[in-house]
Image (cartoon, rainbow, N blue to C red; front, top):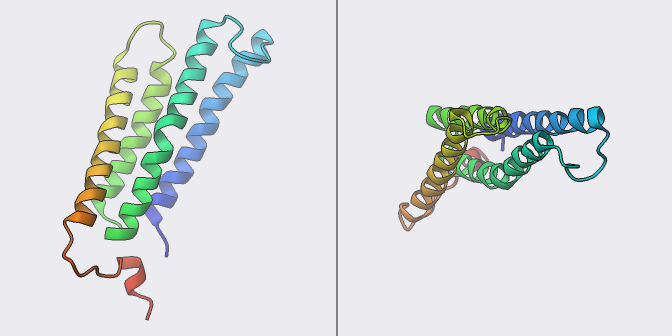
Length: 143
């Protein structure tokens, strides 16, 4: 049961999570802040970027895995995964600014769009299906 899109997306998200954490750590080391933000506005913004990633990406990643398991890999799913990764990178950079930026807003809006799109896809997949539930593509090969 190989889920190439979800596995690739999960790996990319793990690396993005590390990148966001390292961005916080670099500031912590430079200004010697062990806990909290120590009054550093930039550290507070980077911590929020990291926390925001953790708030939105796991649920979306679960949806990707379940949708891919149910309907199989497809180009639109690859595209949605790429949009999510680019959105999260843009959001991470956008959070460095003191004022709203197109990167922050665009990253947030695209993340929301992908998450809602995946939720709608999951619901239409399960409730739009016939009463007879066919085996998922990954399971259909096992006989």
